[in-house]
Structures are given as C-alpha cells and as structure tokens.
Image 1 (cartoon, rainbow, N blue to C red):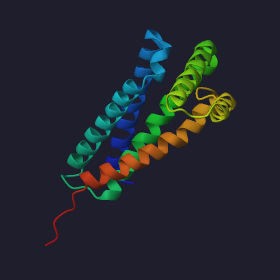
Image 2 (image 1 turned 135 degrees about the vertical axis):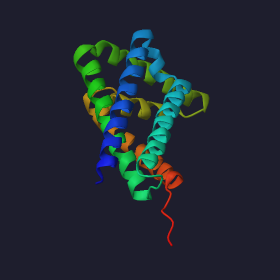
Image 3 (image 1 turned 180 degrees about the vertical axis):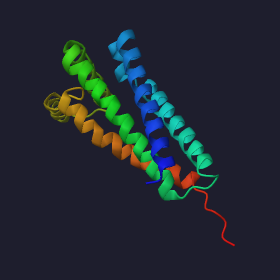
Image 4 (image 1 turned 90 degrees about the vertical axis):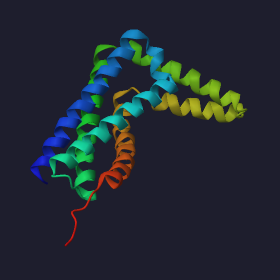
Length: 175
C-alpha cells in the first residue's frame, strides 16, 4: 500500500476515533437517554460521512489530483477500521469497566424504546416478546455486543467507502 494512503488512513482513522470518543463522552455526560435518540444518531452519521468526504478529498489532492477507486477505498477502509477500533475500545472500557450501571440504564431504555415503537406499528405482543428476549440475550453495550458492533460498523463503512471511492476516483488521462 502506498505510503500516502497509509498516512492518510491513519490520520483520519484517529480523527474519526477521537470524534467518536468525544460524542460518546458528551452523550454520557449530558444524559444516557441521548444514546437512543434517532435524530442525534443520524447527525453523528452525517459527521462521519463529512470526515470521509474530507479524507478522500485530501487523499486525492495528496496523490497529485488523481486517485483510483482502489486507492480511495483502501484509504477509507484503513481510516474506518482504526476509527472503529478506537471507538469500540473506549466504549468497552467506559461501559464494561468504569460504569456498568449506565450501560444497564441505556439497555433498559433501548428495550423500552423498541417496545413502544413496535406497539405503534401494532406488532403482536408475542412478536414483541421475542424481540425483547433477543435484546436481553444480546445487550448492545456489553463487551460482546460492542465487539459484534465492529462487524456492523465495518459493513456500513464498506458501503460508504465503496460509494465515496467511486465518487472521488479520478483516473490519470491516457495519451
């Protein structure tokens, strides 16, 4: 892998990881119920998308104004992987070592939120019960849940990375 791509990926991976640590800390300090706010979650997702756009823009510039799809995707993936690992490590320490009580409060709030939404959609109570049992078996903020979240985050990052790499690629002219 090109040294420019590695440096760019590491730099923006650390930036996105620190962004994640910062927003988790802010939500944690203000109110644990913010962790289940859909609109806030979408705003944070847009923040990560903005970081990715800026990253690939800078990478293409650093590569002399041209960037293949592979170079763009590789740089984005390196950054996403580093950012996800930083974020997950921080969340594991915060919610499974430092403050398990807040982890449990968030989990209970997530279950309540899910039940309320399913009831709004007139989902049968037997189905709601199955969903709740599944959520209790696999708490999202447990160490296992957070490690499983790495896979989901990587999948989402791969999709964003493919799209952004396609948008930002610019091949050198052939003479």
